[in-house]
Image (cartoon, rainbow, N blue to C red; front, side):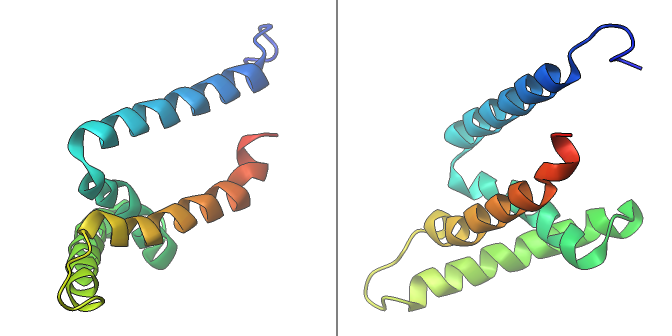
Amino acid sequence: MAKGLGIETSRVRIWSSLLSVLVAAAIISFTGVIGFVGLVAPHIARLVIGGDHRYLIPYSALFGAILLLSADTIGRSLLSPAVIPVGIVVSYLGVPLFIQLILTRRKEYFQ
């Protein structure tokens, strides 16, 4: 319908994607890397549970808690006397997950 009204939907889609990435980056830069858990956990829950929001919202909280606890445990025990920050451990999981999501869902968004 938007194309029929003369709107270039591909341009709008690219600009809105770029804007959402910049907004997410700004939020993470202010809240810290642990805020990245709030972005990663719902995507992990959606991959495991599915799209039913009755279960997705509680399981997102559960996956976020499990992710944060496991990242803290790994960060404390990997290099025993030194402690690796939780955000670094979470980033090792979150960044590849987001890259995988972008590459697999690219066909849906940019058609």
